[in-house]
Figure 1 (cartoon, rainbow, N blue to C red):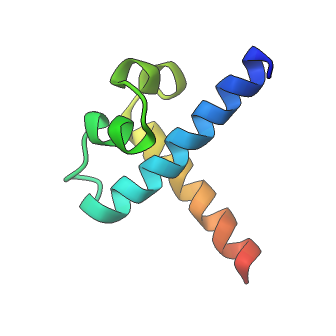
Figure 2: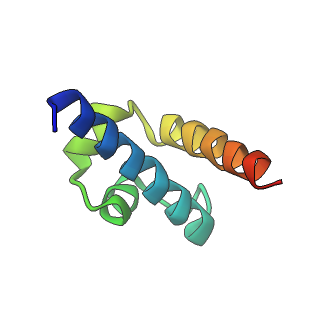
Length: 72
C-alpha cells in the first residue's frame, strides 16, 4: 500500500470515527481526544488530517448525508 493510500484510509477512519463520536456525545460534548480515540489514532494524527473539531464535524456531516442519499 502506498503512503497516499494509507493517508486516505486514515482520513476515512477518522471521518467514520468522528461521525460515531458526534452521534454519541453531540458536538459540544465531544472533543478532539474523543474523536481521535474513536478512530484509533492520536490527537496529533487527527490534526494532520483536520485543522479543528469543526472541520471534522463538517466533513463527517457531508459523509453522513452522502451515505444517507446513497441508501435512499
